[in-house]
Length: 83
Image (cartoon, rainbow, N blue to C red; front, top):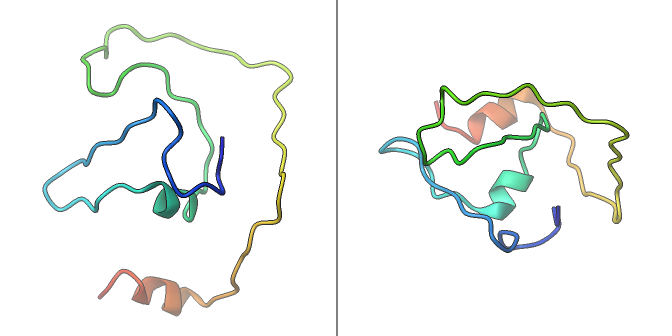
């Protein structure tokens, strides 16, 4: 996954959920990743009754370049999203 890229990976797309959703962008998505998960299925299609239990063996996550982080206070973080 090219987390340092400025554009979506080839073949990836996004869509907004709700009328007030922000414009989805790769940079803003990668700037706010907390959990990491794997979704199977096309979220634009109806597949709720076709669920599977998946497993994963020997997963590895590597870091190619340093990621810049910024120390901040909770008040400052909340201020980014308005009152």
